[in-house]
Image 1 (cartoon, rainbow over the protein chains, first blue to last red):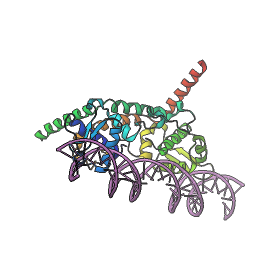
Image 2: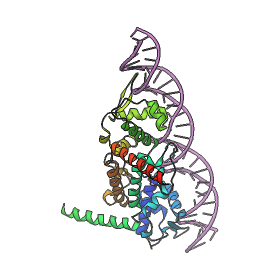
Image 3: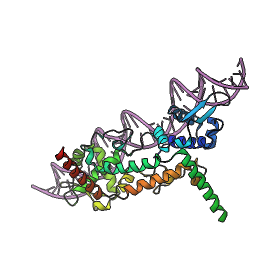
Image 4: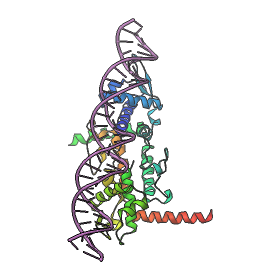
Length: 152
Length: 152
DNA sequence: TATCAATCTACCTTCTAAGTAGACTAAAGG
DNA sequence: CCTTTAGTCTACTTAGAAGGTAGATTGATA
């Protein structure tokens, strides 16, 4: 399960991605718009900034902005920052592999063999989709939703 | 991430699957063989029994056994018993769907759209593989491992 | 220099994972 | 029927993380 932190991080980044190239966005505004607890959001944005995804400006006219184009930020990157490795088992993690102490032989662990498949499938999805892709899929869904609404 | 509980549950079931049709296995033996804390394993096996995957016998000659054939128990079933839903977001869970309170419109939530793909991919894997399949993959890996060993 | 807005430090509360301890109950076997 | 064996139940414990909150500080702008 994704944590609230990761959920909030993605929502905030999508919000900022939509306003990419425009004026900085205030934490307070973002918190209200996306219904995220403000103080919690503060710490999340700070962490995203420390990982290079965001830039900030203090004082009047300040706020947060993406530090690169939305098509250069993959969902997987965001999830890893907020929640850590994507793998369902540390012994199949690419980014932070760790051996299971109790496992006598990794190569022949039945659980590991299958969980490796799960990791690969998940990584293929989340590393293959950027913030820009997500916005496009949202827009398509909005158009689709609007379209059907008219005919109900 | 899978919890230790789920990991232990799967390992225990694989152990029992290998001995399917033979005498019951003692909790203590299983704990030693698979290096699982005995008292913790007790509670896990009991839960698996309460969900119908195992049967037990008390007293001398007692122990635990699978209650059905290893090809009728899917990995996904085990994981759901131990850890709950497989979905990375409760709003994309099939088995225990729950709405995100803060989400104004589920159908156009960018995160949800992608996470639905992740859920489906994961479910396809874990629900598509049985204990029997896993044993077969382990055996294949053992043969593969042995094979290469000779030539190194 | 006032005010705006991000940042830092420190704390809090609740929940869950991962167990442990020990009494209880059922089934064989003699 | 009583002893041993082995699963079952109840009740803790402990550590750590999730999910925040409060308030002081720093830096930029006007």
